[in-house]
Length: 144
Image 1 (cartoon, rainbow, N blue to C red):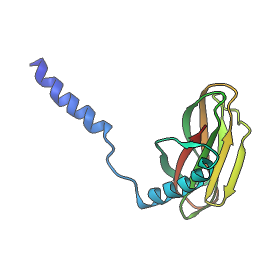
Image 2 (tube, rainbow, N blue to C red; image 1 turned 180 degrees about the horizontal axis):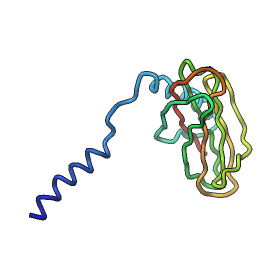
Image 3 (cartoon, one colour; image 1 turned 90 degrees about the vertical axis):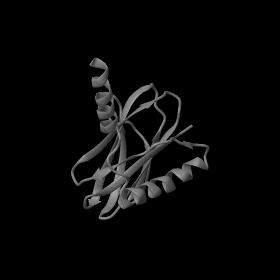
Image 4 (cartoon, one colour; image 1 turned 120 degrees about the vertical axis):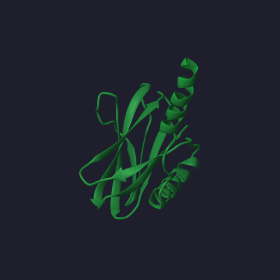
């Protein structure tokens, strides 16, 4: 009897862990734009990390992504957004919530922030909508 309960439970766990939808057209376009920005850094020896984060960027709101970074590595966080978003920004914060100093790239609905952490640990990348309306965004990052 106990064995028969394990099978339905494992199916339930598997069903909950599988995403229910694919990327929307807007998210696909935002990812393409983010990868276009990141490709420029690959010319300087940066490798684009597998994976990406997509979501909705809203006026007067922050979209945060937690990342684990290593001291001494260099990182660039690149974002692309879709209309009606007109201008986005990328900021990086340490684990205490203090904004770190970054180099920046800004081209309207595309932006990037780069830096080299002095200590390893968890950091937070913020995607902010500066102009325009709510739209989809995608964030990718590169390292070397």
